[in-house]
Structure formats: structure tokens, C-alpha cells
Image (tube, rainbow, N blue to C red; front, side, top):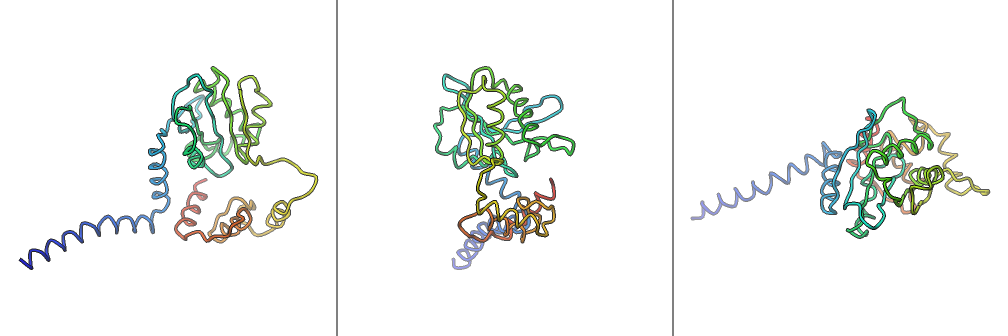
Amino acid sequence: MDRDMANMFAIAAGTLAIPLLLFMASFMLWPSSLIKVYYWYWRRTLGLRVRYADCGGYRFCYSYRGKPGLRPSVLMLHDFSAHKDTWLPMVKYLPKHLHLLCVDMPGHEGTTRTNTDDYSIQGQVKRIRQFVEAIRLNRKPFHLVGTSMGGTVAGVYAAYHPSVLCGLTIICPVGLKNQMESQFDSQMHEVEHSQYTLNIPLIPSTPEEMEEMLKLCSHVRFRVPQQVSQSHKCNVELL
């Protein structure tokens, strides 16, 4: 009897140990894949689906929830070096009956990335208009939301195509010049003259550069786990 109990406990321990070991191996060896699974689960929990829109040899990747109805659709543009899942924390608090779309900006995540494309603000505005027309979002006025770089693109889009919008929300848009230089601006100028691999302070290529970027961009200081910083490094190398 005691031997049977011991065997049963050994089998139970082995059954529990296998998924735990797989998780630890994924965390240590393939952190980027683990993060993708995390976002996939979060999107699924919030009811978001991922789709692709092809137009003229260019492919857009976007997530959406709901269908067009009486209320305006909402198109959300993320910031530089981010992706459509940046909006998940906000989507969590938005009404489920809204028609929401979060698109990967040109050259980001699942949207086409080429060395010959125009990634200026005006160039991105043209691409976003291409996306809007491809999915026929412009059949009725919609609400455009953007943050940081996406906020600047949204603002310029609204200036160029005001008739297709019923509302505009821009959050911390970049590119706005102030009469007085902020502390962040002065720190950016200092970092620009440092030994960054890509000479761009907001695109770290090493874990050390990522820590410096977080010090520059974050008010609250925190340490990023090594697996996460290594995952970011792998993603940067793929750009």
C-alpha cells in the first residue's frame, strides 16, 4: 500500500513538474514567444481578433472588436517602436459594444516593413489612409485616437482628412516645439551624443541601453528582468 502511494505521488509530482519545467525553459530561452502568448491570451480575454488587410502589395495587421453600428468606430494608433497590443490596458475599460480597431503602424509588428518605405509623419498618414480605405472604415465618420508618434500621425491625418472624422484624441503627441526646453528634451540632447549603437536613444540595442532608455522615459525607476531585455534585443535585431 505504501509503495502504491509513493508511486502515485511520484506520478503526480512528475505531472506537475513537466509543465513547470516547460514554462521555466520558455522563460529562459524563448522570452519573446512567451510574451506573444501572453498578449494572445489578453486579446482573447478582451474579445479582440487579429486580421490582415492587403492593399497594393502592402499588408496591415490589426486587431478589432465589435462591428460598425450607430456609434462611430474608433481607430487607435500606437506610439513609436510599440504595437497594437499597447492599447490592451485601455481597451479593457472601453464599452464592449464599440467598434474598436488597433492597427500596427507602418514598419511595426505584423504590418509590412521595408527599407524603401516612407516612415515620415506624412508618409505614415498616407499609409493609414490606405488602411482606412482598404477596410472601408471611411464609409462613415470615425473617431481617431493616437499616442506619442501615433498622436502626431493622428493630428496630421485630421488636418488632411477632416471630413472622414467625427472626433480626435491625441495623447502626448511628439514633434511639438515648446518655447521652453523641458527637462526631458535636455536629457534627450545629452543622450543623443552618447555611444548608442543605432545613434537613437529610444531604440536600445543592448540591455544596458534599454536601462538607460527607461531611466530617460520613466518617472518611477524599476529594473527590467534580464529575459525581457534580451527579448527586446532580439526584436530590435529583427527590425
